[in-house]
Amino acid sequence: MTAGPVEAMHSWMPHSPCGAWCLPAGDTLPKVSPARRALRLVTLAAVVLTGPLCALTLSVLGPNGRAAVLRGWFRMVLGALGVRLRVYRPGALSVAEERRRPRDRGVLVVGNHSSWLDIVALNALQPVRMLAKAQVRDWPLIGALAARAGTFFVDRPKLSTLPRTVAEVAEALRAGSAIGVFPEGTTWCGQATGRWRHAAFQAAIDAGMPARPVALRFVVGDRMTTASGFLGEETLLTALLRTAALRGLVVEASVLPLITPEGHDRRSMAEVAEAAVTGALGQAPARRQVGHGRPGVPVAA
Image 1 (tube, helix red, strand yellow):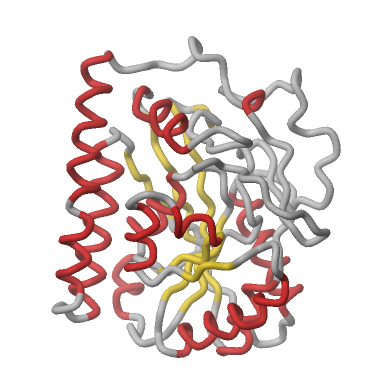
Image 2 (image 1 turned 45 degrees about the vertical axis):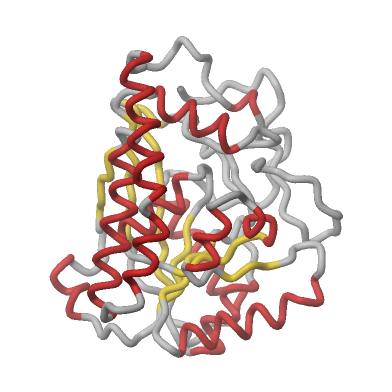
């Protein structure tokens, strides 16, 4: 389970130059004691093991009940690791208004991607069916839970399967599902972002459903950190252990205004969503990140 598995390459394949050199030095961040770290990992294991039971209960619940159970479970994952979720709604609907939105209306939830915790944070906000690379299906336990949750798996080396995946996502949006997508297609460290792919936005246009941009930022104290990253060839276990050791990690989620498909093609809709997210993060939309990610390039803690 690595951040960047070896796949057959083609021009469409997402690629990030980020790697271990983007991470802060191990002695520059506040850490919890070894005992607290062990307790976090044991608690996380207990929460994860309740996942199959949680999945079984979903079949007997209504839409609101399922959303509440899933949101609560993902918040327990964050809590087990000592990660706090801080939500901002700059210009978006208030929480009360959001709850009054029709539950049968689909939405494409899109955001930047720097950490394995991104998926957890999105689902702690609003349960979504994720669009993920096919390799995730083979991950022990996680793959089974992802499949049970209705994840769409895309075989990235086989572009011929992409139209079918787009059609499946569009159908799910029409049926009222919230679909989560990271249009960068792979993880970046957060100091820079990748160019957003447009294919998922075609599903929103075909379904006539809006996109909801969400900007995710990880901070320790008042500084952005790359320590929560899942980068390059490192394993999920390595990233997990590093996260479990951090003291005071906060994921800040900025929930941004909806983007309706009217007047857009997939390219322009993706560009508007990307600009909204990078603007909330204080960055410029990515075009070509020349030189980023090489050893010696300073990054935030």
